[in-house]
Length: 90
Image 1: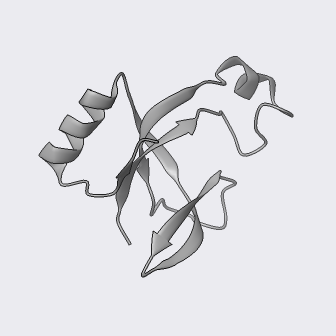
Image 2: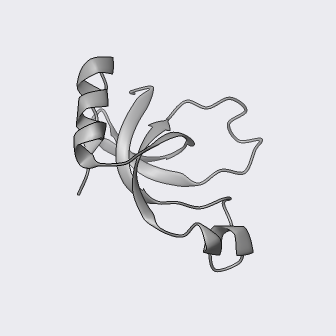
């Protein structure tokens, strides 16, 4: 499983999401982000999850948001320079 992936996600402040959290409503927008797929304290801290393909199977994994990119070009350049192979921007 990759340590870092780049995905287009909706930003949120917490796992409750914009339906139940005022801070999440304030930052509710879609962005291209670098995600840490192996954050510390998994299962102990409440985090959002995304589906990730591991060995041909889809699994749901917790993640920490590491960075928000300004553009698709910036995200692809970062991926090329840092060896991030799992990039989905659709």
